[in-house]
Image (cartoon, rainbow, N blue to C red; front, side):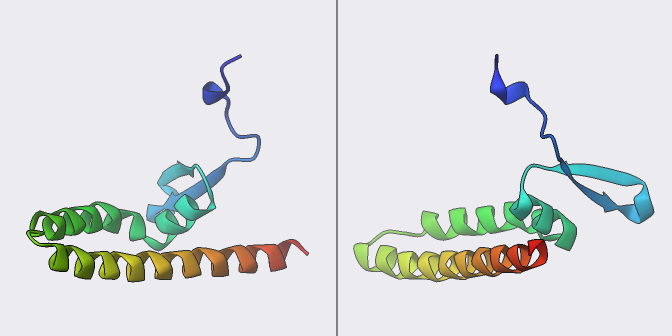
Length: 92
């Protein structure tokens, strides 16, 4: 049986626009992004990072951009960790 076609037994939903728009979320992170409205920021961040990467011409610039990426992803990982801790406390 193909597991990619299986629906979640307990799907997550995001309700927007006073209940007129209902969207399914594939995970907790997607749910939080959609719920907070940050899901619309992802394409903007992607294009921003693509623009910055297109400016890389030397190794020194690459290292500085890598430091910036590392800082951004470190903050994202911290946020995800905090979210996981909050959701685990609610389950207890």
